[in-house]
Length: 407
Image 1 (cartoon, rainbow, N blue to C red):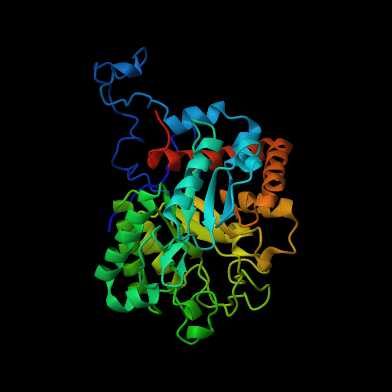
Image 2: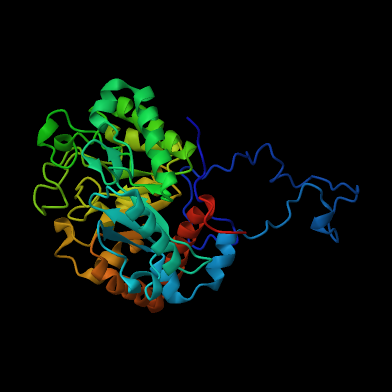
């Protein structure tokens, strides 16, 4: 496995960036001379006064701004807010015109089952045409294999479920996810909402409705699941497709599916030191560029708060403890029963306040309300504005890494 520093924010643009765990600079004050008052300069005078730092060949020049950083400075407040929303487009429908042209959504994802490559291609083209030419959208799809394959027919090949792949081993995982990556790349889709990194509690098995019952998990052992997750991430990356680990910090211990129920979605066990987190760590180490937050509740992290709204889950655990610097997205906040009682505006702003980046809605009609809420929230406080810019930069940086932005 390889460790990548994902979407790291350059010093000139790190608006509210998180620090990695430990904060060790790798130097020892006792040995690096930083506390040595008796040190002498190169000119033998004991003073460095009057020296131009640029004369020091060891001084790094200020790095050139990236395409993402340059574009960030050009965007209007509504465009910044819009980049933090991804909108679901059901099969057989068209992208509502206002989603991209008025609300500047950062991307779309394909909902339901698409069996025609031509229809997928037409939708991808429409998304590109509806966006600013220098600000193309991210295109994503749930493509896990097994029952969860939104692209079928001549749009994508059939691949086994994660449950089957987990039994067959990492070579089988790599083969399946290579084909998934090839199929998505061929359709102009840059983001896979997969793999599932949840470890299914063996005591629940098929009674775990969101994962176990659908064969979506690689297994019940965190180490084995982690190896499969890493193989999937690396296979997708090899095809130029960004992987999304889901559903952090894990849905393997809940009984009900958060898409369809607001009850039975509490996991009383998962906490900061839980071994079930190891599969997510393996995916991060393998280079996953996105993590999708669960809408279940984890009292060991934050009582009564869905993980996608929890600072303890996103900032403290995922970012600070596990060191993830990439794009954090929500599970569906549009049609999911788990958050149906939360006001729409709060569904947009609470993930940002908790350290997340992008909200995902399966209900395209909510796009305007979500973008309105984010734009208004940013205008209320300079700290909120910086938080929106930080997340927008992560979105733009991912787009740049995927070859969507020109320098």
